[in-house]
Amino acid sequence: MSNAVRALLMTTGVAVIAFGAVFLFFWHAEVVELAGSARLISGLALRAVEAAVLYGGSWLAVKGWNGRWGKQEA
Image (cartoon, rainbow, N blue to C red; front, side, top):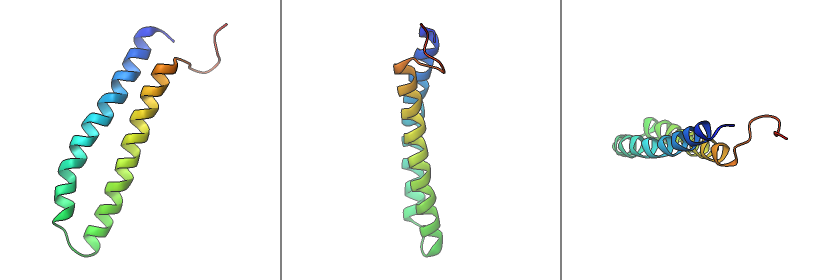
């Protein structure tokens, strides 16, 4: 894997986490104002999206840092 691809993966991973945190911050404000089952469902969706953002962003960053894609080059 070239250094440019590695840098792009790491940058994208950090951007996904950063933009996801900002988006989730504003979404959280709307969830707090809800009541009843809408709050429960929105809260569960919020936690699922949080997990996806953190997992996806960290996966991209680690994949770029490690630099391996498929079979290891000799």
